Image 1 (cartoon, rainbow, N blue to C red):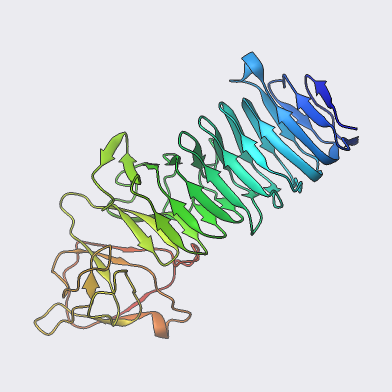
Image 2 (image 1 turned 135 degrees about the horizontal axis):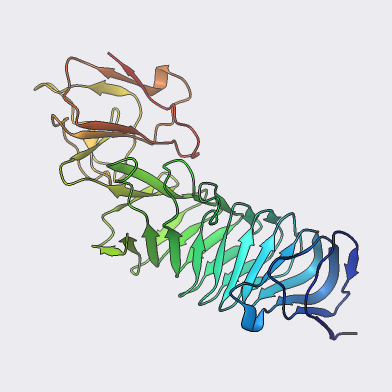
Length: 342
């Protein structure tokens, strides 16, 4: 038989809650409630609604939540500390904030509606699921106390709302990793990298499948809208932010590629500056080919090198350099992809 159980809060360190086919409504969680008990069910929905205390209310799930269950949060913060392997849908309504510290690996779909937020350092979504950030919704990596770790989406991700990277101040962390396809169509908020690394490339998204961008994709850095999408570099399973100080001319290493391929390829090759220099330098989009221009800022990325020999850059003669950056490889972890050989 259906029906609902209405309670004001859940707290405790252990135990089991069997919902069967009923709904469980948590109507007024406290400032830091944490439920350690396991919850099981078959067809019901757990709803968290904080009411007037939404700004401070927090419901933490420390136990396992399993079965054919749905999770809906209307307001306040809902924290996932361990694994919740329920197989139903996950929905964050207006004013709701879903923080993933553990994992929600089997949820069928995730929807962050207008005014909702998804963040954390764990994993949400199955390989076949889609996480959808609606217009007005927000997704961000990490959380206030730990903005350097990555949020992982198990399946596909579509962002029509806001991608917020304003807390991220690292080239190597604070990413959103997508296990499937990425569709990016909304505003990207970012912290300028000039204060801590200067000119260069910073990775925002990693995706394992394909990528599509929409006509509403835009960039806002430090509250200032940026023109067009020229500051994005998309390809090789990455979405990167490209920034250059006014005095820096960014030039991207392209290995043995002398003609444009519409993306930066990288790889081994010879770096020269004289009249015999090869046209193995390109722009962020990979649409140009040119010899090295003296005093430029060199960026080395997208190497698929697995050893020093096939990630080698041979510097022939003298080259004048305004700066250099070695970016992580497509797995987001490899910072030793290239080796300079004089």
